[in-house]
Length: 234
Length: 270
Image 1: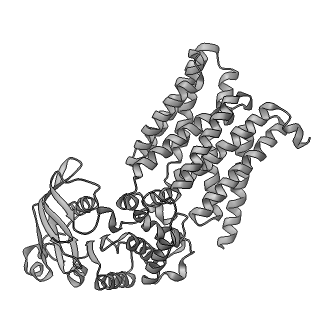
Image 2: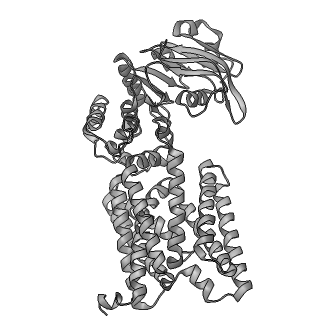
Image 3: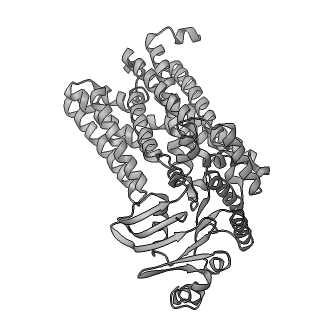
């Protein structure tokens, strides 16, 4: 069984089915990019994977990890931009899924947080306030938090939104590095060129139907034309 | 005037105990409420509390037996409205606040005419506190303190990023509900002393003032707690000296601290 299994799922948002009869499997260590126009159901699918909405039909299951062991990188909210919190306070909150009923973090969790900050090159800013960091640094902090929660799967929701091209490139490289270290990645993106550059597998959601396959297969498919500049949509 | 004079009146001792405990609750709950943009909930609750107290007085029943269930119920409703985050959420809160206020004023006026009762509810009176208020506030403060101590990290996670917290299995809805419920109880307990129009200042001022200078969640929480305790004591003493309503004295002290911290924060950022 693969790490992530979506079998014939139907998901609805505000009473409307936005995804119907979707099936895909993601093996350990694979890199999947989910693309599609706005409103095609990308966010709803993420909510399904994270367990916020239950599929009305079909099943979403995981092999070897629990649903709360997904390392999730949500889109930033305005509220967070001026939130008083230190880098370490945020990163270690990714360990909450390991706490059970314990009220406080143990040294094991503190070490895990420190290791992940080192992994993402933010060790020098441990005590810095989050709201004084640049956009790229903030994403690294949230990614380090996701790594604390992640056993083997990272789910990234539009990770490069609002970043300049240089920082965007750095973040993609960082994600590539994590993938090479064995992380399974699911990334929702508007950026088809990045998807084609980094991902092994592409899931393209569309109002009527979807495409799921390897990057090569996708490049040959009519779906690919839709999102490319000069294609017949967007 | 000596500090022992201040404490020689039993009602002053009651006011000090209840006030300090309510301040602790307000400061802790306030950090989470303000950061989540739920400041208006405290304000809405106090107006609903006023309406409930007024009706209880007119009906001749014990004030808390009406106010507690009504305000707790309103807290859930206001929380749901705020969580939706749609346009009109704040308008809906304003609608509920003013309606409750109007109903309360109607109830009291039809019964006795606008007079001391209304004034006491709106601006508070330290004479209103009884022995049972002291006991209630001890119980509430202990529960709120334990809630914060044991769930501190989870409360941080839900406050900073509810979506992420839910993804890691934190029951965000439960924390929101408990926060709303504790806020409702704190407001009901504190409003007769602070006044319906002023109790929400106790929730909003300390965290906002702390945030002028502090930059981490932990320091904001601790600073907010200390500010809240200090402003309450200083404000109560001030009103005792000048014979003004306690609530007003406390809020003015809060305002002074807010301005001082804002200036200090602006200088530091330069």
